[in-house]
Length: 438
Image (cartoon, rainbow, N blue to C red; front, side, top):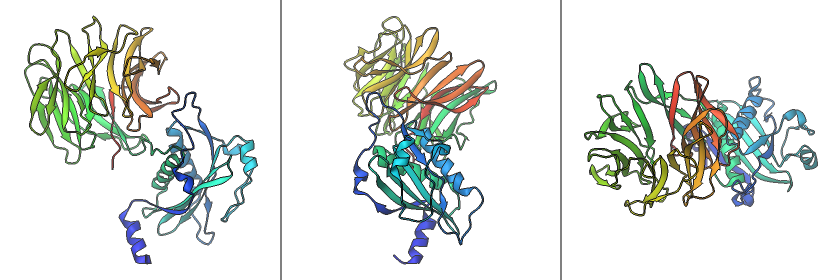
């Protein structure tokens, strides 16, 4: 490939990762993050060096990209980022590097990241990942960003580290939608995984509830009282256009999309009682799935589209039930506590997150789809509600309220490492995690 073609590719993409020397061991999973008793893995990230001394870089740029890489890795909750003040070995310019792995082992590092940065017409970075215990390099990759910013490079490097060690790209390229309640009304906002890019998605200034992303990332469904009564809307996230898809007499509440994004679960009271229906979006035909004297709400599809979890008070109090996608085979799966609601099915299958009342507070729990292995994820003095899984199934977002402050929080699926995505004096509720976006 000649230089002109290389330049064209650099301009076309925001950032480009070009494999350099790359071990065939990349296909190997080095970290089993699903293993029982999982602990965070210690990783050392060295300050990036100036690869071309003849081309000086802006002051602090090397430590900036290093800090950004560490921040992205820390967001995953999988790594223990070692303090660089503990490093015994310095970083000498040049490659191949002469690394004294025993000195990294001595400070408890399992993995080591080193790299170089060159600032010119394009911002260029080179990153190398090492397995300290094995004393071997796992990858050496080059990255470029024509915009001259370090953040896209840091994100690409962190994602490649995660892929190399876990076989999973994580949730970096995702958003979280949530509702901000103000005195003037409610609306839906979204925010990137790294807490950047706050965006107002609706301008209804009314009662707005239950935002749900379509798995293909094209639409957001939600319920709004904009016209004085609850109706379900479908918003095209590319064009911003909205259309009403459920406007029956009585209650119209939004549930989740089917895995193929072609159907939408609803709770309707048009036939006299709150029951669960499924809407074919292309034909606008609906089918009733539950038919009982109880209140059935909050339906959510399993990742394979074969089952639906929902909430019903048919046992006397709100509990989580599971049924087949055609409405048959209803069965209760929560038996701990008198109030369990807001189910969210893990994209990895098997587990359902929900909120339950425990000790006078709402807390986040998970349960197997069969009803076993109940795990309490939160146990603080806040009210923690409305769980929603990340696309990787590794993390859960939820809303938390305590002392007049509301937060959108993210916790790892093993109950470890909670971080605050957004905090406000306004009431923040009903977070919904997007699919991985292009």
